[in-house]
Structure formats: C-alpha cells, structure tokens
Image (cartoon, rainbow, N blue to C red; front, top):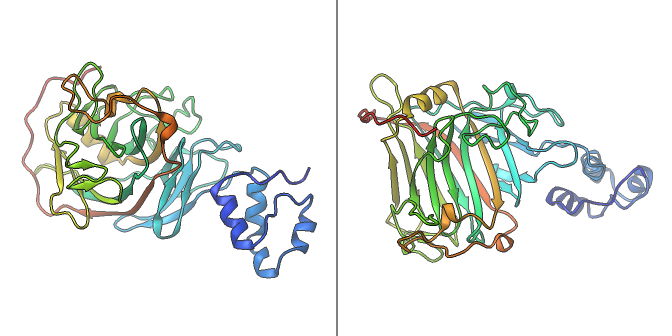
Amino acid sequence: RLVDPLPQGPLASSLSLLLGTSLCPYPSPTMAVAQISFVQSLVLGALFGVCLGEDVCPGAFDVPGYGPVSLIPTGWGGAASPVDVLSRGTLVPHLGGRAYFADECTAGVYDNKQYAALNLLGKTLRYTTDMSGSGCGCNAAFYLVSMQQNEKPSTCNDYYCDANSVCGVACAEIDIQEANQHAWHSTLHSAHDHSGVGVGYGGGNGWNGPRDFNQTQYGAGASCIDTDKAFNVAVSFPVDAEGELVAMEVMLSQEGHDCPLNLKLDRYAGMKELSKALAAGMTPVVSYWSDNTMLWMDGAGTDGQGPCASDDATACSASVRFSGFSVAAIREPAAAARPLAPPLV
C-alpha cells in the first residue's frame, strides 16, 4: 500500500481538520489530490509524511532571551514520542512523550551538536505549566541535561543522558520540575548523584520527601497554587562575584493568588560541577510519563504528610502543557554558599 491508515495522533488529526478531509484512507495520492482544493494541497505533503509514518520535526518556537528553538522527539523511525508544538510556543507532551530543545531539527537524525545549550548562569528562565488531570502516579517534567556535550549515542540512540543513566550514559542533571497536581520536586544532580538534593513537596515510601509547603498551598483547589489551572514557574541560577553558581531558586505563582511559593537550593556539594555544566550550556527537556511506583515523588511518607497513599498510572490525563518560555538576566549577584560533603555516588 502507498498510504497506511491515519494514525490516531494529534498532528494527523489537526491536519485532517484543516483540510476538511481524511487523506490517509485513500489508496493513492492521486485519489487524495482529486478530492481537495489547491489551498488544501499546500499541506498535502506534510500529511502524507504522517500517513506514511515518516519522521517529521514537531515544530519550532521562539524563546525570548535565547532565540528560535526547534523540538526533537525521542524515537525516530515511526516511533517518535508525541510532543506537539502549538501556536505561540505551547508544547504538549502526550503521555509517554519526551523531547529536547534544539537549535535545529533534521527529521530522522540525531546529532548531539544540534541540541540547544543554554547557559543560564546569572539568568532566570520562566514558563507556564498546566498539569490539570495529572494525578498520583503521573510525572510532568521539565529539566536540563548536558546532551550537547555527550558524544555517546546511548542506548536510546539520541545522545540522551542524565544522572541516573536511564539510557546508559551519565551526565549532570537539573530537575526544575518533576511534578503532578499533588507534588512538586526541584532537584540538583551532579553526573553520578542518583538521588540528588531536592526541594518542594511530596514523596516518601518508608521515608519523607521534601515538605517546603503542603497540600493546602499546592494542589487541586489549593490556596496558593491551584493545580486545576495553569500557573507560572520562574527558576533562577544566581552566581557569586566570580560567576560561580551559588543556588537554584524556584518561584511558583498564579494569577489571582498573592502567595507565591518560593524554593531555594543553595547547599549542594556538587554545585561547582553544575556551575561548569551550566557554563558549557545545558539542554532543556520536556517529558510526561506515568508509573504505579511514583511514591518517591508523591507518596505520603512516614509522617503521613505527603499527598498520595498510592499511585494509579492509568488515571493520568492524556497530555500536559508548557508554554511562554523566556530567559532574562538576574540583576543582582548572590552570596556564595557554604561547601558541603561530596555528593553521593
């Protein structure tokens, strides 16, 4: 067959709506073209690429303070994880999706040098996230890893690396957000520090996760961050007089609420390593996944103060959203942090 049935994906569905017809069931391009107008045919090539299962770059968007960014999904070859790029830079990771910020995208190709490398030292990165529907057992993540510097393709074949060597290669990792409607974690990891040091709320299965705020302040219908709605995230990386990283500061805020939640990580033994990683440039990653063993992030803990008694990976929403990315300088330097013991290996 020249054309396979229409995939049940958001890109193919959107194009079909735009054309006013479903092209993939047609046995040949000739028959399909006969059914559409000239204007509709402008997107015919893109739609046939989707129908044939060909690799297609998700799209590009602008990040003020950095510039144009393309998105590269994990899993070329017809198995690309779905992360859509909508208008005005809204990213929509569907459940199971993961994608990387890049300076350019070549469909079907993974090249570590194409990945974006943001130097966020002395800067603030802002964005908006909407995780409504992501309950216990769901993980909507936005984080930084040293992918551009990684010259090993890894077992994922896309040069992915992180502090837990998920694809067989270790590198520095800064988790700005690992979260759902009930829990939030921001964590620093040097390349071989699997657990890292984190702040936020939630987690614990025989132990206690961070308790920097509680479920009356953060959660569905909560007083400060109502996770039934979108809210804003600002993450800053202040430096000392020598330009070395001294902290990661995260602020969660929401329109209509006057109690932003502030988090600060300024005591981490791997700070110098992460400072070097940020100076070299780190690649932002968006992902959305689920698991029935997510209690490390959202569990009740031994103190019973965490949000989730159990996880249900089947109850996660189909997708989450990230939007409004921008980068700007921090105006004033911060004081240096005190040194600690070496990180766990």
